[in-house]
Image 1 (cartoon, rainbow over the protein chains, first blue to last red):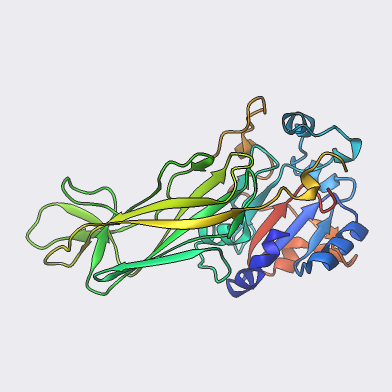
Image 2 (image 1 turned 90 degrees about the vertical axis):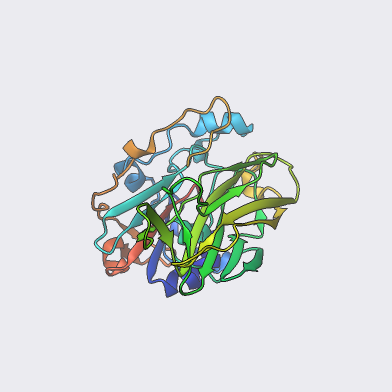
Length: 272
Length: 59
């Protein structure tokens, strides 16, 4: 399972990981052995817990129909696919479920976007730098599957004494922005920015919000075209670095992230 | 941040499906891949947690 790839990062961040499915212990044992899964895969054979939690996927046949998969009785009892994030007290802080069982996030993407943690295991990475600001951009996987959701992470390291602007911002100033240029087969969501700090410039009435030090921005992208082949995602990053006294020239950088198309996994074919 | 499902799939409101944000995740005790009973809250031992509900390990 894809989460295993990031297990070292989950461990370092002190995040426990559990999988729950309706598979038997024997099926899970074989699966865990084959793919080297080290976190608990819980067996809810009969789907009692899945039902009690209200997570039984009641639309599996409709979803199958859309994908041209034949209905089979053994497909009943699956949960809506998605993840729950719990805090230290066991309280649900976030749910991430998808309209389609084909759509998945990666472990690295969840770590970066949901837990705000940096990962050591991820896909293609590109770097650039301007005066006082280093930028790293990466994708959480170097390959994608049809309808998979990946995250672009943009990391800025702003030198001490400098800041870049967040929003809201007075007119005439340039806030940090991250976006994906339009590309067929790629649907980009909204960038998730950390909360900026309020900042007052001496001698000016306007209020600013700024980022200093290390800034992590994440942006979800979903691959919506079948057989789109290998892609290059054009990521645009724009910012202006300033000190308390003056500003450097605004910087617009375009990063190109290569991502390979994975063949549809055999388990997604209707024959089995 | 939700993507549009392919045409003709029902659009589900996941905020109302399953345990809600802000509530304690219910107690779950199930066997793991080694056949050992696992009490999820006991096992996570005060750590932040990711629980992944997935389709199946088999298809």
